[in-house]
Length: 348
Image (cartoon, rainbow, N blue to C red):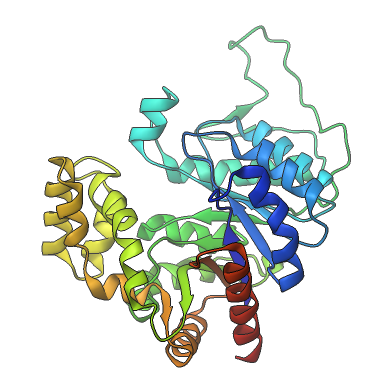
């Protein structure tokens, strides 16, 4: 099981990146850089590539609507080049509030667009002359559109790899099924190992049945807050605000994918209460309604024995990469947690 970590800005970006060298020595395998509606992830990933040697880097995630498919492919090839083959392209659809509210682009056909983007990216990386006629993207533009001067081109540079790994963030059944079919990796949010099979098992099986064997096994990326000790149980509360934000505030009524996931986990009443409170501006009350079991089961927080049990549950459920958020008072403490969880994972 690989151990990953999302980039954390607790001490500022440059300070955090400087600390990555220590995490790299401690055995951290991969670092993820988010792109929501803040600074772009690409410039940060390039900076990290220059400051590390072995550590894999991944976008977590680039939104499929904010770049053309060809630019997505060029960006991934560029990051793979500057990192000497250490990049993973993490992509996702995000949600209507961000895509339409910040980018001004209609949030349409996320599954169809994702499938075509992955296909186009792989053509570019193989240095094929790019021709694609899909429902959502046509390259070059067909006759009658634009100037009529477009012609099939191939990327000038030779990518370091013609098969850069593609990771897709997905939680809906159809999206998960497609991910299991076409992607190298799958990243769900709020991953509960005991409920994963009931919620996603059928979709994963259907996608894997159509999967090209050349892709290899699907990398399943689970996420978890991490704290080890006999007095760390209260750290579970750190997960409440984020869970409430996603379940309650990331989308309107009937258009919140994370709220739907909470319902599918079996907490329909709580999901409704969290959303009603959050949308009414009562964020603290919404956070208080987040089920304790959800916080506990999607975290690695507790005694060493407890964390070992939870780690084993993650692996048994199919997790192959664990993306942790270490909770400690300083860099030394966070570093010790990465060393510890890496050792535990190696011993499984």
